[in-house]
Amino acid sequence: PAYGTTHKEVRLAITMSLPLIDPKCKDSIKDQLSRDPTLLKDKNVLTYYAKHRTVVDAMNLAYAVRTSIGKKGSKSTILGYSTAKNHALNLSAKCEFMDATGKTYSGLNEFPTHVREFYLASLHRKIGDEDADSSDIEEEDVKATDP
Image 1 (cartoon, rainbow, N blue to C red):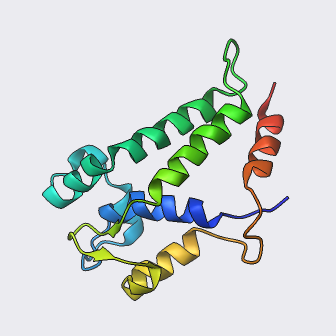
Image 2 (cartoon, rainbow, N blue to C red):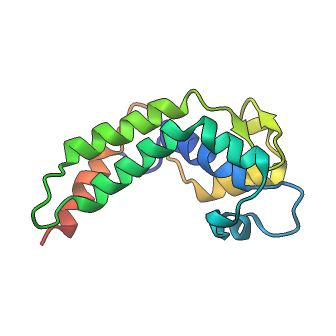
């Protein structure tokens, strides 16, 4: 099995977290991402998430299915989680990269250096296994957590 983050997973993580990051802010990127999301008041950020609410909803559904797997009385399955996750991943392909200032980027190479380095360091990805599916990891994780 492939271990690491797939290209689609990296894209989803970046598209949903970049709007919380102001590249010119003195706070560290980790601190910016750790802020309470209910305190967001910037119009650019709120508009971005409203525009892409289907992606946010799909991510929330995938998370809910994943956390309910293995719970007593739950009908959630790994297949259901995989389907929900893939739906969110596919929807993220239509999202542009936008930071908290409202600036859009066409790709990771256009990000400010410190932002790009943060993502490369925090979103570990095994290069060379592009065809690999991360669902192998999830199946092992679920088996390990089953009572």
